Image 1 (tube, rainbow, N blue to C red):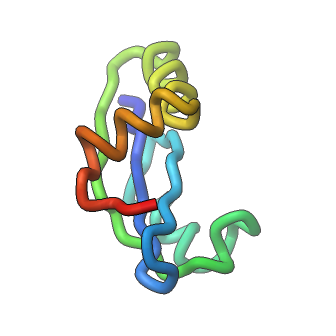
Image 2: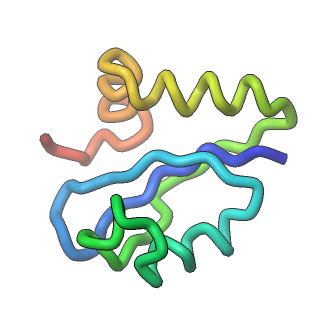
Image 3: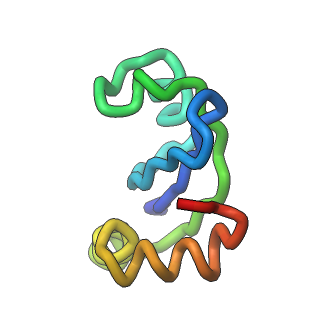
Length: 85
């Protein structure tokens, strides 16, 4: 199973992070410990939503899409409509 996840910072209003993992619980702990320099400044994080894929290529493509301009617009409109930015 491949999980595309969206985290929301509890420290920094409206800051999100999009990632891909096979173990969501472990990955969230890593983000909240500060193991990732990119996300450590905005910790703690909470899981806002996630989508599970059986196919690694589809998961990678969806993660990449969400990080693109049109994908981010989709995310704000359909997945996280309360996100203001």
